[in-house]
Image 1 (tube, rainbow, N blue to C red):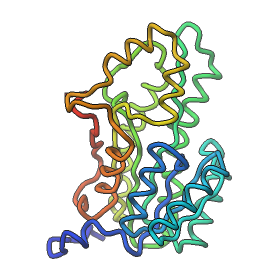
Image 2: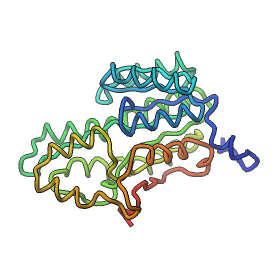
Image 3: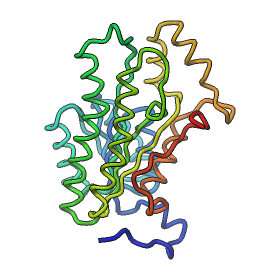
Image 4: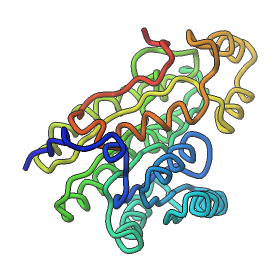
Length: 269
């Protein structure tokens, strides 16, 4: 098998996701909802998975109506293999398979090293790293069974390239791990025409990030806030990241795998 040469496709066809099916974890709000929106707009059928079933169903209804697309929702806990498998099965039955799986669900707690318990560390790893691994495994198995390839997109973070502020050791370690997983899975899955890419956002204005900032100690919050305005003159918004995910999912990126794309407004430069 080999990735198709898409040189003769028009730009409109390269970016189109007509006939493809996508799963977005943590897709009920913030970055995940913005990603689901762009994928649906490009023509994909989308399954939104989230711990908050009510919010996921509302997002699915909104996007389905806006784009006349098939958008469905389910409760999804990425720390539970049974839940991941059920989401994969639902996508298979209701959408007709999985062509794109976006691992967006994540935790961003702030606990200093000396105060962090093993349980707190394990919780972050369970969601941010093990959940990505288990979801990739589920999606890849189904993509291989279908025999038509696919794309796995893992949301990393600029924290996957460097250290950040005090109190986020588990988060930083988990995101470095996801970036490594992108590289390794790209090698393992290439023979099956499955591309694996990471997308690494800088801080963006989302409901979750606003709550996370508010919960931080004042000193840490001030330190982070001082760095938020990017070299491009503004704070990121969810669609800034969703457009990069759309690019990665589409045939525009057909010759890319194993890379993590920085959507960081120059933060890591």
